[in-house]
Length: 405
Image (spheres, rainbow, N blue to C red):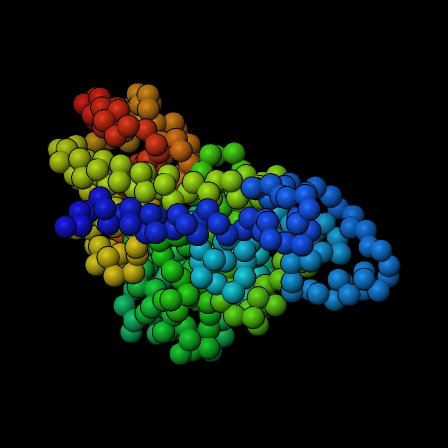
């Protein structure tokens, strides 16, 4: 019988063979027949690429959509190996590595919008994505409408305009963890000639975007793939050749790439991502269930919990769960009391990232912008990223902190 803990880890477990083998040097390659090769892709640093003659240089220069380079700004071998692995995980056509998760969001939006266009973005989106839409996209004359992440299909259709080119999604939503109906969003987008772009950072590895109608999948590789809180990277993956050509052109023109050392760290982190995240997902669910029993807690926002509003969609579309979720305290708790509790934790670091080996806590009350009513609880809330700690140690730390309330 499959338990809840098994289900949240299942997708991660199924990734392991792929993570071990894809994006590595092939010892059968002719270049290595006499010398052998390393297990891991070597780090290749450099800007200038030398050619034996002009004809070779011209030939490489025309291969705009491949993984060759006439100059270092078009990528390095270790970047291209990372791109192959990300595309395999996402089941996509190809991937472009960029400098950060935010750069992945902004590069994708710049690639698939132009002056005079309109895009739809969920009200629960990552804060810096909203800031980009409200500032730079607006200066480029691209208008944004924020929609309820739990919007019904009829209401979404009513928001579509003749110039709507992009529906952006983020599932689950930052901080508030709404699970979006991605197949429905894709259906509406495609019926109106628009594309569906998805920030798939939480679901990377456990949500297959292109199986559900997504056109462009975005990942912050800083999180799960990096896994050690020591690199900043992003990725954009597409499913078709035409979209790949458009993305690759835009990335080169925008100068988007990543350093070889960061790419190498992400490749190394990916080799163990499956086993890390399976453990972290199980621990996160165990802690989330424990928190629901506490009188100080009003709600736990974790889609794998049976009473979560997004549970049915999560169960339908995802093969596992991530280690990130939020906690809403009772209305009687003050923000100051919550902050005192957070300051008392010894096992949780206070930090804004997530997905690494360490456990983190971040207060979310007062720091989230919303355009629509009803998206935020009036009670104090905080977000937890569960690392590789012993669950008993984390529960003891939380219990000590909650008792201070």
